Amino acid sequence: MAYSSEHDEIPNPLRAGLRGDAVPEPCAVVVFGGSGDLAHRKILPALYNLALNAHLPAAFGVVGVSRSEYTDEQYRAEMREAVGRFSRTQPVQEDVWKDFAAGLRYCAGSFDDPSTYRRLGEVLQELDRTRATRGNRLFYLATPPSTFPVILRNLKDAGLINKDGEGPFTRVVVEKPFGHDLASARELNRLLLQVCDEKQIFRIDHYLGKETVQNLLVFRFANAIFEPVWNRRYVDQVQITAGEELGIEQRGGYYEEAGVLRDMLQNHVLQLLTLTAMEPPVAFDADAVRDEKLKVLRAIVPLDSPEQVRKRLVLGQYREGSVAGMGVPGYQQEKGVAPGSKTPTFVALKLCINNWRWDGVPFYLRSGKRLPKRATEIAVHFSGLPHSLFDNGPTQPNVLIIHVQPEEGITLRFAAKVPGEGYRPRMVSMDFRYGTAFGNSTPEAYERLLLDAMRGDQTLFTRKDEVEAAWRLIDGILQVVERGEGVVPYPYPAGTWGPSEADALLAADGRQWRRL
Ligand code: BG6
Image (cartoon, rainbow, N blue to C red):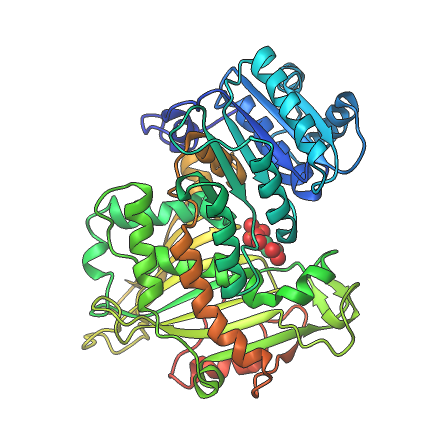
C-alpha cells in the first residue's frame, strides 16, 4: 500500500499497530445476514482489507448465511462487486481477492430452519478440511435483533457452539442495536449467556473501532501532562458533539422505532463520554478498561423525573431545509415515517458525573441528523484565568478539541501575543492532524473490530454490565419522553444546529456551544 509519513523515524501505528499484534488463529467467520447491507458495505470490505494487509491467518474462511439463493460462485461475484464499491482501498488487488475468495462460501437458508444449520455445519467442516480452519468459528450476527434468539438457539442445537476454553473457539459478534430498552437488553444478555460465556460475546459499537476514539486512551494515558489537569479543578465543562449531515437514508422503519436516543446517544455518544471521563485503568486489558468505563456510567446522575428531563434535555426533529447546498425533505416526509411522528432526530443533553474527578463539571452532549456538517468531536473547555494581566484583548479559556471525524486530530486553543507593540493576546490553535502525521490510510472501524474479535480481545467491545448501565440511564429518559410528559421534539430546519432550545440549555448556565 502506498504510504507516506512526515517523520520516517517515527514508527507508524497506522501501519504497524494492527500488524504489531499477533495474527489471529486459523478460523472461519460466519456472517448471518451475509447478503445484507452491512455485509456488502462494511464486513466483507473490512475482511478483504485485512487480507490485503496480511492481518488474516493463512487458514481462513468466510461463510455468508442468508435467505437469498446464491451459489458460492454467485456470492463471490456479488461480494467482489461490493468490495469494488465500498473498500477504502482501491483498486481491488485481484491476486489478494482471488486468494480471499477461495475461502468464501455461501449457505442459503432461513434462520428458523434447523436444516440451515445442518448445512452450515457441513460447510464449516469442509472449510476445516480444505482451508485448515481448525474448528474455530466467529459467528457475526449482522441481522435484526429479533432474529438473535432463533439463530443462537439453532446454533446451539446444531452443536455449533463450543464452551469457552473447551476445544476450538466459538465467538459471537452481535451488532447494534443491542436491545430496545433496558428490559430487552437484559433479555438479550440472558439469552446470549444461555448459549455462551461472556468471554465469547463481542457486542459491537463501531465508534470504539475508530482510530481517533482509541487515541483518546493513548492521548490521556500515554502522556504525562494532560492527566493532572483532567478534572474539576481545571476543567469548566466538556462538550461532545456527534453531528451528521445525513438524514435517515432508507431506514425510516428502523429510525421511527429508534430515534436519536437509541440510535446514537445510548451507545456511540455515551462511549465517547466514558472514554473521556474514565479513571486510568489498572492495566490495559479488556476488563480493567471496561471496569473504569462502567464506573463512569454508574456515577452519572440519572435523569429520571419529568422535571429533570425537561430541565436538562432538548429534543428536535428536522424539517425541510438545505444541507451542503442541496434541498432536503423534512423527517416526516421521509419514506417509512408516519406523518405527525414524534421521533426525535436531534438531542442536546446535560449530564453530571458524581465523582471526585468530575463533580460540578457539566458534560453537554448533542447529536443529530441533517445538521450543517458531519462533525464528531470532544471539546474539553478549561477554566478561565484567575486574573488577567492583559486587558487590551479578549482571552478565552483554553479548549482542547479531539476531532473524531471527519478531520481526525487534536487542537489546542490558547492565547498568543499579536505581533507588534504592546501585549495584545489573541486565541490561536495548535493542531495535530492524523493525516499529516501518519498518512491518510486509516483502517476502517470494522477492520479493527473484526480482527480483535478473531484474536479474542474484548477491550473494544461492550460488556454486559456496561451495556445495561447505559440503557438504565437512557431508559429513565425514554420513559419520561415516551409517556409524553411535556418533552416533545422541537422542529429545526435541516442544515442548522438543531432547535434554538439547545442553545438555551447552555445559555441557562452562561455557556454556549462551540461553533463548528
Ligand atoms: C450508526 C447509526 O450506528 O451510526 C446511524 O445507526 C449513524 O444512524 C451512524 O448514521 C454514524 O456512524 P458514523 O461512523 O458515520 O459516524
